[in-house]
Image (cartoon, rainbow, N blue to C red; front, top):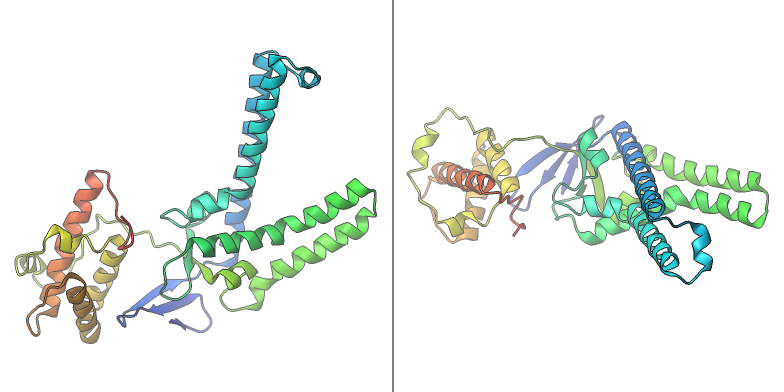
Amino acid sequence: MARRQPHNRKRTVITPEGVALPFVLASRGSRAAALVIDLILIVTAMMVTSYTLLWIAGGIGINTAELETNGPKSRALQALVIVWIIAMFLFRNAWFLFFELGPRGATPGKRITGIRIAARGTERLTTEAVIARNIVRDIELFMPIVFIGGAIASGSDTDVAGWAGAIWCAIFLLFPFLNRDSLRCGDVIAGTWVVEAQHRKLGQALSVSAPIAAAEQAFTFTPEELAVYGEFELQTLERVLRDDRGPALDDVADAISRKIGRPYPYRAERVFLESYYLQLRAQLEQGLRLGRRKADKHAA
C-alpha cells in the first residue's frame, strides 16, 4: 500500500510487516533527460556498429556490387548485412529491456540522472511489467515515425501524416502531467513508477547511541540464517533501527524470527535486530570482497 503526501513527490510504501518505507518519485525533467540520454546512446551505438561493419567490408575488399554474384565475397557481404540487421534490432528493441531487467532496474540514462523503475506497491518488479511498459513506449515514440514513413513511401500527403504524428506524440507526452505520480501510459499498464535511486553505500555502518557492538555477541546466527536476506533488507532493517519505533521493531523482529525459525526472548527485539543487522552486514561485506553481491532476498 502506498500513502501519498500532498504537494510533493514524496511517497511512503507500507510493507506487509507494517514498516513504512519512504521514497521520492522521479521528476518529469529527470525522466525526460534520461530518455534523451538513452536515445543518444542508442543512436551512437547504431552508428558505431554500422561504421565498424562498413570498415570490415572495405577491409576485405567487398562492396554492394558483390551482392549480384554468387562468390565468397557475396556470401561474406550477406553475412555482414545479417549481422547489421540483428544488431540494429537489438539496439532498437532490447536496450531498455536488458538494462531495466538488471539488478539496478535502470538504463544508463536513468543511472546518470539518478532514477530507476520500481513496482508500485510492495511487490517485486517482474519481467512482464518491464516488457509491458517498453511495448507501450514503442507505441508512444515510434508510431509517428510509422505515420510519416508510410506517407513518404506511398507518396501521400506528408503534412497530414506529420500532424497526425504530432497529435499522437502530444497525447502521450501530456499524460504524465495529468496525474500526481507522473505516470506515463506504460507505467499505468505495467503497474510501475519511476523513483529516485537511493545512493547508499554498504560500507557506511549504522551508528546508534546504544552499545550496538555488544549486541553482536547476544545472538549468533548461522550463515544459512543470514543468507535469507540481502542489501535491500539490510537497509530496511537499518532504517527501522534508526527510527527506533517500538511497534515497527516488534513487527520486523517477528518477521525475521519466523523467516529463519529462531525465537527471541521477550522484550529483546532490539538486541535481536541489532545482532542480526551486524552479522548480516558482515556477511554481505565479505561476499562483496569475494565478488558476490546479494541485492535482496530474491537474489540467488
